[in-house]
Length: 353
Ligand SMILES: *[C@@H]1O[C@H](CO)[C@@H](O)[C@H](O)[C@H]1NC(C)=O
Ligand SMILES: *[C@@H]1O[C@H](CO)[C@@H](O)[C@H](O)[C@H]1NC(C)=O
Ligand SMILES: *[C@@H]1O[C@H](CO)[C@@H](O)[C@H](O)[C@H]1NC(C)=O
Ligand SMILES: *[C@@H]1O[C@H](CO)[C@@H](O)[C@H](O)[C@H]1NC(C)=O
Ligand SMILES: *[C@@H]1O[C@H](CO)[C@@H](O)[C@H](O)[C@H]1NC(C)=O
Image (cartoon, rainbow, N blue to C red; front, side, top):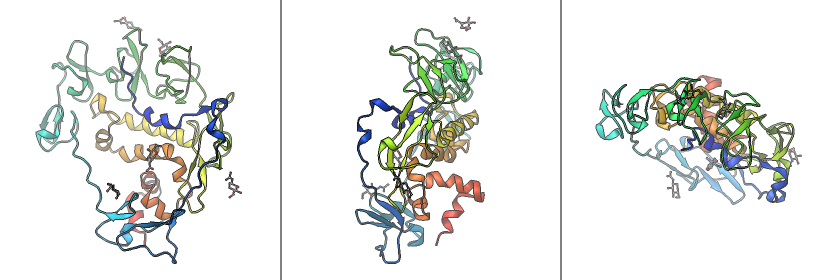
């Protein structure tokens, strides 16, 4: 059976490691560069958005230096035109202007129109939103929550996964992040489950499989954000076991490092809640496209999921940012916070002088 990650792939890089297994944890982290708006004594060359001295990165947003090239390339620190996004090939339910925009389906009234209920298919991708390709090769309605007969997540409505074992192909559609602690799930991999409400699970048995029990998510022992100098400063606990995250450089004026979060920390809880809420609004997307950028963009959830992803995966980068770091490096995260505060995300960045 194919394992299909919807949003959990984001978590692999920040897995908590068992405390005793972590040899490298005692190593000191490298000295971090400082990142901040330039001071008056620093001169930024025309057309640049910053100067990197090796220890200090002095910044100035492109929008304040030139009106044409408004994108700061953080590798070269040059102001350039906003990079072109590659042309996307779209799926049933997604936008198109010509037939070549549709990977599957026929471009009709600006939307790739796929196979309708009862029409033939060989892949889920061919069916219109709300449908899946049945074992019999026909587009049929996705299964609702609590219904059995799923083989993978694609058989279920867009806000549910399939709780199914490798040995059967008769799983039950289960809403993402809905299963309580102590209950068994079949999607427990590396301590993570999309079906558990905590996001966290403990594997059952030692064999190669993904059966696990939903458990209390680990949280940082210290209050977050927690500054650090070595990984062993970054202790977490699920109430029983101690574990470590990692100490990573921040993007702040002090060159301070911060502990990366555990899934039970606010940024982990927000990641799960944001995705659950976004997936609930993707009923106008094809079943296998529920977490694709084109789908999330179509339903107005791309900025929110990007921001939540950034806040979890790149957590240390988002702490104590000044206004230049926010606009150049971490806007994927901040744009949503400002939208919440001011009601319009972009205006904040345009106001900077
Ligand atoms: C940024 O600059 C680097 C080095 O000059 C270049 O290789 C890269 O393609 C640029 N990235 C974008 C998005 O323009
Ligand atoms: C699948 O499981 C459900 C209950 O778990 C059962 O009612 C149904 O008959 C099963 N279907 C098949 C094809 O085995
Ligand atoms: C998931 O499937 C396993 C194995 O069949 C079963 O033990 C467990 O109760 C199921 N969990 C849920 C939430 O349906
Ligand atoms: C954390 O920050 C405080 C206050 O700036 C400082 O005194 C302390 O040394 C820092 N701890 C680490 C581990 O960097
Ligand atoms: C965020 O973290 C991921 C994974 O650690 C990394 O690949 C990515 O480059 C980071 N994003 C930025 C903008 O640095």
